[in-house]
Length: 112
Image (tube, rainbow, N blue to C red; front, side, top):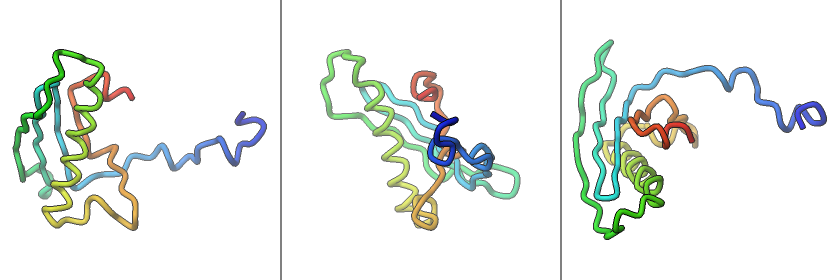
């Protein structure tokens, strides 16, 4: 497809560039709840802003098909908290590249 319509299917080289982030969100989720650590870069060190855990009010009966949904809910909650903290993190010119902001120990979520 790239050979036929490179302007439509090819990624620009700058899309592979990594950008630094002022915030870091470490998260993990299970079927029962999630945990978040939100930090801000302060010089060369990370300063912890918020640490929280949330117990989900769902009875999922060990149905692990919901695992990715729980991980997504943790990310959505983190973005909401960052917005509430008042820093211009969620919207930067209408868009925000969160790839360098989110960290998880879930290999399934990190690979998607």
